[in-house]
Image (cartoon, rainbow, N blue to C red; front, side):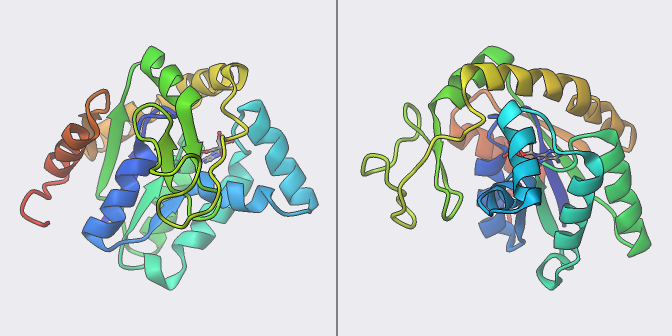
Length: 218
Ligand code: AMP
């Protein structure tokens, strides 16, 4: 299955995509994780990526498309993938469609996780992540067992640098302008499946499984 997961920041894309990685046995490719790995380096590219991310802006399409498509050409993604956070603009969606078509492949499902703005702001302010294994926590709704320590790999957890109130506001505006139009883009192509992300995690999981027709798979 070739699947994309999209929706506003903090909708739960990463949480669902990580779970689907286990359920479906397909790689979880998160564009945000690709950029977070690059930004740790000491290079002109890392500085460029940091400047976009820290302001809450998108990294330009050309660079984003090149990096994500290169990742999808790796052998583990040839049997299928769960793409999280890409595409986020129409040019990215078009580039993905044409790259897949060039390999006689296509997207099967665009899973849209929808959550209202006010809930998103609350969620993002509480989010902490593991810079090592990319596990995601929330100090209120999903705290780690040991304070600020990753349950999975034991690394110290961090707040994301793009999750201050000011940057969150910019990210929501950029999402509205550039990514929300993808609902229509995939709707007209007949592959959109929408799930209400403003529910308990277990309920969202059940909605995702139903949207992907996975109820008999686990
Ligand atoms: P995420 O973890 O998906 O919220 O991504 C974190 C940040 O990485 C975003 O706010 C952008 O600055 C950058 N980024 C991730 N994916 C993309 C994308 N598809 N296009 C442009 N920028 C992206």
